[in-house]
Amino acid sequence: MKYAIIAAGEGSRLLKEGASRPKPLTLVNGVAMIERLIRVFIGNGASSIVVVINQASSEVDAFLRSLQREGLPLEIVVKTTPSSMHSFYALSPLLEGDDFCLTTVDTIFKEDEFSAYVKAFRSSQADGYMAVTDYVDDERPLYVATDENLHIKGFHDEVDGNCKFVSGGVYCLRPSSLEVLAGCVAEGMSRMRNFQRELVRQGADLVAYPFTKILDVDHVADIVKAERYLAGKNIL
Image (cartoon, rainbow, N blue to C red; front, side, top):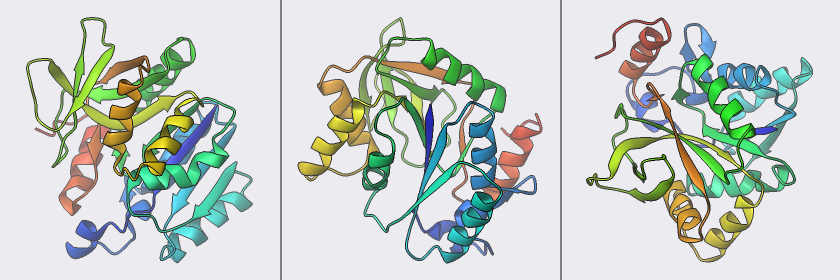
């Protein structure tokens, strides 16, 4: 199984608030966020890990090259893109032919929950397992509508009666999803949420997999919150 990390954003909010490191290298419990994800992925059977960074990310590039020299199975794509969906598209040639798990660099989750999630996906016949949570930590959450068996019926910008969860920004998908992605790009779409909507529109069997919490590190205050969560402390 392959894994992918979108790390092509600038992390502008962190930088404006005084962060001294690029977002992927932001330390959570003393470990760069991107390295934490890479180590978690390796612990969950990664055959390869592909990462996209922007062309201004020389410090992140150097860090990833150092991990490559350690023998970690990393492939790096350097490309500045207009949206996370386009970052995903830049990685797509390296994801063909195998199931994969994709996330952005700033997702924080419990490792045991993530391992159970990957195991559930790999033992299923569904087209995709989408990580969800009922803990809202995003400034522009994507609400996920499901049936009683957690099969996804829609993705919405506003909450409605069928939405118990929000997207956690972690996606386990089959390689057939890359054809849908290519179609989205060809039609001029952007944003990951529109790609997800297109999967539903085309009849993909997507299952919502609940996590207790998934956090995003967008602000300096989020670093402390992430550290407290991973340490099992109250963050409410």
